[in-house]
Length: 143
Image 1 (tube, rainbow, N blue to C red):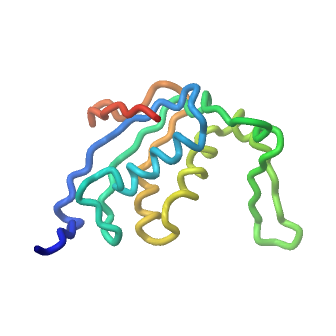
Image 2: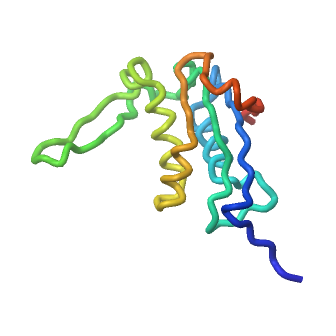
């Protein structure tokens, strides 16, 4: 018996919507990363991009547990000397909650071409409305 290997041309992609309201940021990101990667599918193949599309709504209402809101910081570097920038997650969640979810999901995807391609299928919205009603996304419950 031979092992089944999925092919990129034959993969049919569906749309899923995750509601982040009242859910932990990390649990929402894990669920989104698994669907983007395609790990929920029985025909998952590690070297083939067989993931689906994910819409995350209510990103502004996602919860960070403990003291993460005050203590956790998003750090990045401009590339210049002394160019380290820090933004506390409290400010990040107020100004740009979509970026907080995107960064969490990006860190859970593989750091290669498949991960970069998977991240393009992630759509994050701060509110409850999204622009992908025509794709008829299926609601997924975060465990």
